[in-house]
Image (cartoon, rainbow, N blue to C red; front, side):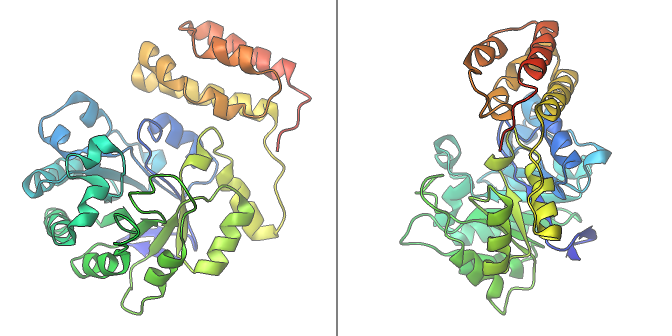
Length: 330
């Protein structure tokens, strides 16, 4: 059993990564049903919360069926992060996660996300302020370092543990790598095997199959893994990994009918949470993932991403179900 504060997770939990414009409540709902043990919101700008920005506040929406759920946020100003922590606390998440790993330019240029890897003292000050502003467990997600010359994750882990974080997730790339190249899990293992480290250490990066999940579990000794891009349009990755861990056998992939059912549920929840116009619009990024590998799917994809008519889209999903009923995808 893995514990984060009062949160009890199963041995070797599977975490859903916080992904901007992806990890919203509709997406989290379908991942939870397929076996995600711990999930996080999209990351939220601390200054947006303090300014009462509508988009930031909406990302605080969490639901009981999602628990345990963490709210993730980011920022570069100590006072703003502290004030935002109090706002997050009112949403009553199970934990609060600080993002010190986002590599995208619009975040880094503000001195937030992975930019703070260049100033560990500042990272520690911000984290300490957050920890002292709440009674909710605080965790951190970060990267190996800024670049190959500054892979400081072992120092970072020790110092953050010392000021009170209760779990750490490490993405096995530097900021300079962005999402390119191969994630280096050897340094994640070094953090986990450091005798000073007592908190749970979760690994993130490149897990896209049950076989790889088991190999990384065995080879690097982490307490659990976080899955991001591999879950987009394929929430079944969680149940497949769990089945493989338990039996050593690959679970049959979802049928076309299952894919359509889950895509329909995702779309319906998106409409209910965001409203018709935005719900339909933001679902467009998911269709090609749900139906990846289907032959001659391009014409359907074009209709999915250009239509605003809800009933037409639902009818189109049923057409996909009928047309591809015999297809087997792996």
